[in-house]
Image (cartoon, rainbow, N blue to C red; front, side, top):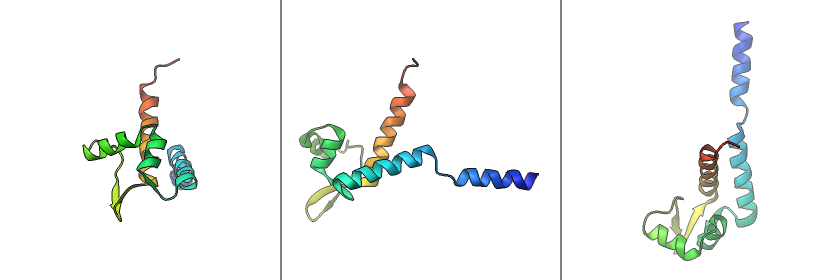
Length: 99
């Protein structure tokens, strides 16, 4: 009996969690729309900000998504953007007033 329970627990733990699936879907969307990395204009569009606001936050070290410079242009990895969007969603869910 114990062995059977252990097997089920391991099977359950190996199944993807809803957050993992949600993150993968966000990643797939971002890749389809923008590619593997997002430039400043893409980040602004995804976050509903102006490109100038994104640049200002990056220069002030307040931008919530890690960025890097490649050949003189700044980018963010699609995985980091998807993770940030998931974190924002989780925060919104936890602070939402019950209906």
